Image 1 (cartoon, one colour):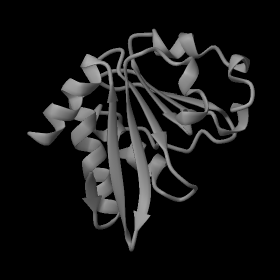
Image 2: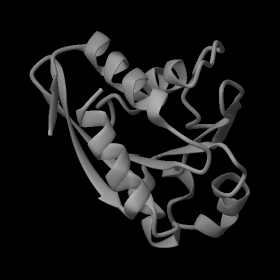
Image 3: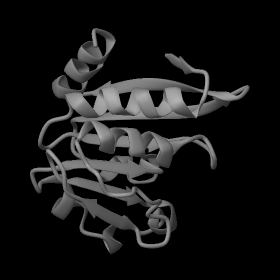
Image 4: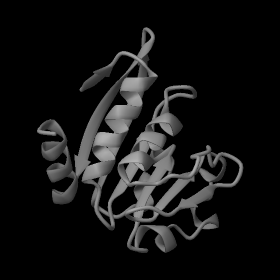
Length: 147
């Protein structure tokens, strides 16, 4: 469990994790509205050396960014009832990093290897609980603890 005091620490946490990401990594972000899923993704993008402004994909479903690796930022809240309405495989197996907000809605349709980050509000800050699925995600959690 990581406890972050403010938005700056959330961005820094995301950036630190972003520097560790490799081609094919999948992160799912879960948490109530306003817990910082998009803010965390902004930090991930910094760690992936992406200079573009990161925006929530709530209404577009997917936003793509170019950096050290491509970043595919999805928000599946609006399609949660119908995960087949988007070709998840096109992003998951594209050689980039895929981040899915509200990913728990499509969790049963995901590959076996991914890192789940659950965000919650704690005072003015945030808590992040990591749950690894598969060897690559376990390695990411270990590496993050030592960066």
